Image 1 (cartoon, one colour):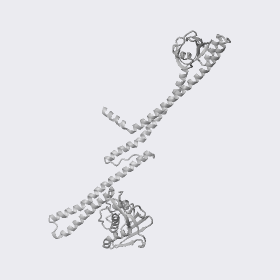
Image 2 (cartoon, rainbow, N blue to C red):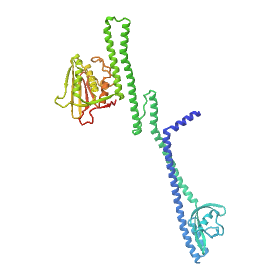
Image 3 (cartoon, rainbow, N blue to C red):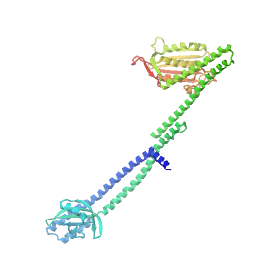
Image 4 (cartoon, rainbow, N blue to C red):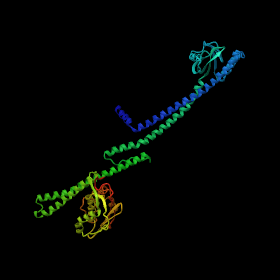
Length: 498
């Protein structure tokens, strides 16, 4: 039980949600505490300030009373009456104390007695001609002790030093300050509670998707790509969740592609190997007569060539996708190179009695130069033309159209073959995809040719598009940037971007 509690405590300590919530809450608590302290001091100073100003004003009136007393114009009885009236005006007491600490005159009682010991420090300051304010505990009537605010000042009475004390109860100020404190504290506590609830909700909203992403990522690591993060907002957190789900979708597609790729590779390798092994075993066992060996050896040779093409295409595609393939680009005459590729493929055209319609710029025009790798460009043309040959019926037509403007070279390879459906057009760039065998001639390719074409064209900074109609033919449209003589270099090496 203790170990489970320790593990739960450790998880909470590592929890981003708890850190965010406590950080925000601590900030708010400190802010509200500072606000409470500020208002407490502000109102305390405000209430004491009013009392201090009142005591200072009454001290000035006492000084005015002492002047006629010392001149003989006012009796001591009238002085006591005036002090009593002044004392009642601020609900306090007025003491006039001699230099020995005896109370000479009082507005209430205590004449002839010594001042309380708690006021000795104030008395000494006044005798040094200082004045000021202080608080003290004073016993009233022999038993009652009060907390009072006191103003003290040095005065002269009958040419002798004396001290003037004005005392007012501080309980009223304390009660007023206490009421203000409650009026400040209660709203602040409710505000803090409301802020805590808001922070709790906000922290859950911020960290909830992150926790779900973490659990989804762990599930993905175990091969489960079915989970997604709920998108509950359109803010940055919602956008992050959407991006995460998009990433999961892509990874799921890549995982499916990887499985399909392995299945297709296994199938493509198994078929020729099974054929080879069967024929070799049959010849070793004498099942196939010796006079038929040349025929079956020819079939074995065809299957070996098929294996070679498959392995070569796989290695080629791996180098291109991994970015390890290097393009040896030069300013290439596209017209001349296209003619060379057509010449190489002339026997294939003739074997199917296909018509080739070529539309090139006029020979007197300036050559069309593009910064290309000659071998890779030739490979792109060969794959596209082989594809057109395979899916164009006997006596069909294949058109090759080359044109250019100031910035772009455009090459179109068009046939009037069996065409493709919309679904097939969306998948022709996939590895090992082959057209429907029930339509047209059975393809003998590896299913990697167009995938390699796509990556090579992108690596050569070009674009490729396809359009097709079922039963009417297919058109591939290539575009490459035109090379200009003011380029910095005429030849350099570039890696494919995959």
